Length: 146
Length: 146
DNA sequence: GCTAATGTCTCTAGCAACTATAGCTTCAAG
DNA sequence: CTTGAAGCTATAGTTGCTAGAGACATTAGC
Ligand SMILES: [Zn+2]
Ligand SMILES: [Zn+2]
Ligand SMILES: [Zn+2]
Ligand SMILES: [Zn+2]
Image (cartoon, rainbow over all chains, first blue to last red; front, top):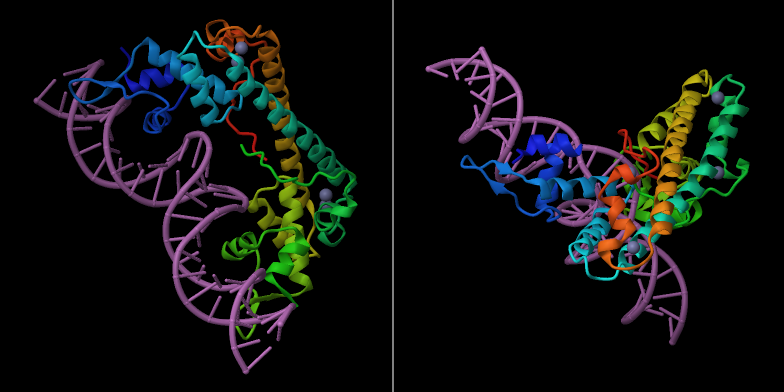
């Protein structure tokens, strides 16, 4: 049995984050010791590691909630899980495309600046006028959050 | 003179966002009409367009605040502005590297899944075990937002 | 001139996904 | 037996907005 601190250390998750996951129902309520402290077993560790890994791959907590409930029903077909993963891949590809454009613009800005006064700074100038950009990098609508 | 709605339409910024920028001090308090509605001139439009463009390039509001106050002092040297832009470029490059790794892992996952039961789903399996991954994509610390 | 539709006002609350703080209780080492 | 680390709860803050309620302003059509 692990205390919350050990669990967090093993899974690479901070203690308040574990309590937060429990609070929003991503982790089941943990058993308690005589002194009211949470105690975890191997299953909790696996579940937390799953969450952490999925977070590291950029899945939202909502997607993870769905993935976890799928993985709790091993006999069901896996199309739903695959669809979630493919949606995440598509999202990553969208962000990648946008970031690639941003990188190009930022590079142009910093390279073109001769480094004089603000009045002549290419960075400030370009920020004030998108028509000086070489790509249309604008935020289409949907969000690339974290 | 523009009302807040016209200003937003011209700059491509939603009305509540403009009020929010004023609230946090990114835009100066606007003058008001007889009926207490905000009125904007050309300078406000330029400033808002600057903010919008910088946001589109991924700068944080804090960075934009600094860039704006720099651009208000045109005689100063532009090293500080260039540094902010280079920091943003570095940040974008970090996110790009991470997203590239994520994309590779997600592709591996969806390609390897044969599409049977959850119990055999490669997506679920990999999410539960990072050692099945081909790269070390883990979250060093910072996040990939916009 | 009147009315209805739209636009704007303030204020509050909510989103994701945590993180930090305060003020307590419990546990483990010495 | 004492001390310090680790745990508990509850609340508030972070970033960059977005949505809603309910009241006032402006504009267009008739
Ligand atoms: Zn410069
Ligand atoms: Zn641009
Ligand atoms: Zn599958
Ligand atoms: Zn992995």
